[in-house]
Amino acid sequence: MHLSLAAGTALLICLLKTVSAETTELRPDNIKKHISTGTWLIEHFSPYCPHCQNFAPHWKKATDEFNDLAKEYDLYFGTIDCSTQGDLCDEHEVMAYPTLQLWEDGKKVERYTAKTAYEPLVEYIQAKIDMKKSLKAEEEAEEEAEEEEVEEEVEGELVVEGEEDENLIELKDNQEAEDEAEELSEQEQEEEEVVAALALPNPEGISVNMDGTQLKEIASGSTPWFIKFYAPWCGHCKALAPTWTQMATQLQGQVNVGEVDCQALPAVCQEYGVQGFPTLKMLGNGEPVQYLSDRSLASLTQFALSHSGPTVKKVDFNELIQHLAVKDVAIVYLLNEAKGNVPVLIESIANEHAATLPFYASSDEASFKRFGVSPSDLPVLLIAKDNSFQVYGSHDFSNTKMAKEALARWIEQEQYPLVTQLGAHNGQAILKGTQPVVLHLYRTKANSKKFYQMATAKAKSSSDVIFAEMDYSLWKEYAATKFDVELKEASDQVLIYDAPHYKVYKAGLDHQLFSLDHTEAVYEALDHLDQLEGQTVLSPHEKLGVSVTNAFAWMGVHWIFSLVSLSALGAFVYRYLTHHSPKRVSAGILPSFKAVPTTSDYHKD
Image (cartoon, helix red, strand yellow):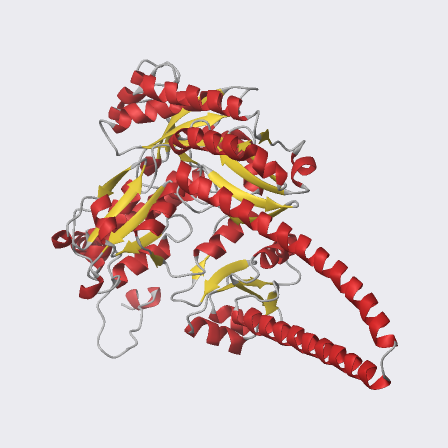
């Protein structure tokens, strides 16, 4: 496995070097110069990605074949290595590898969604060239027609000049009628375009100011709206404003965007559970979903798009394969539509994971065959990742608490690929999850291949651990605060983070720091976490909070024992206070006065 992976990576790098003769390697310092004019098909890849390794020879063969013809029609090929140009790939909103995008005169036009194989890629490139051929032919035909029209006008003037005025008037009338018909046709076309635009979400690409009545209509409807609740005096709101405006522009025709001024409408914001500013929520199409990730343009846009359609997308076999080719992880529900639709339970779970996990449903027989499922096995839920899949062991998809908890536990355990890139969208879920995490904290991805090999070997024996990479440039403050780690230039470090117990371990049982070159020490440590010397990541006040939370959680689970114990404790305290309190003189039922004898009374005799 190690040799095959290394060989595959070496082959990919070799192929990419070969391709560079026909394609342009794009970097931040040259990309604007190259793609500002013409049409560019750009491949975003990582040399450590198995899908990229499989796709590399197909990309090379296709670009070699079409290189000369493509240039003739102003079509060019480029590549971006996301392992070294991560910021550029983030700017292009690349979510998976490989991703192919078509750019026209410096602007992104579309994403290639067909299968990452030679034949579909060739068909796609050929279609773009054919379209350019057609446009070029139309332009040439229009130029010829204009030249002929000029010649005809000159000839017509010469002929009509010698005729009667009646013929001249008739010729002018015909021309005016044609001009009016053309103007009317253009006007009708504009009206049709306006009507079509109004039918789309967010037709103007803006964030709409909302009031309480509009929000109620949205919340009870089926059309998603991404809403910002803000206050004009809020500093964080002011910082978000330009990004929010830019996001609304990007989502034109795709997702509705709105905003509510909570200073002007405090009751409305209170009704929708706003407790701080800014609060971002997706309303419509079910229960409200609050956005809790970072406020970058890419993350906001991804969240909005992931909630803009049905949470479970119904697809046929070809569509499913196309989606799986570009997704690291996906949930697939196979069903017989004649016997029912997607259960409410699946829809509910999909809605909770909409920002991180795609859900698909298929009733296509070809989809059944792809995963080795017979119609008698349906319905079946599975998770596809790392060129493989895992089938959920239960067929109980009833909308009950027990069924939902069981499915949620399974997804939590299986939802991550072999190696996960830690980011704002998944960091909180992983670092506050229920599984131990092996972390590769890096400045450069030079050793990512070794970490991938470490994860591959461990996956053969156990799947109850997450392997994740942390980009130090993004997690520097977190690493210093929580892990007490500061990386030197061009260095990296391996850690084990015991998420359930909030502890981080830097060394194994032999007290040697973890290393990518000594994988067995990491595996041994994972099997004996209770014997390692680690440090807590909690501050004193966080420890207190966790202790109180755990205590209440334990009491909730063992409520009978807790009730009996508290009752016994209360009885003990009551008895103690009763028997050890100062004795009081017994008195009658009614208050009375009793004279106290004086000294003179004792000496009267």
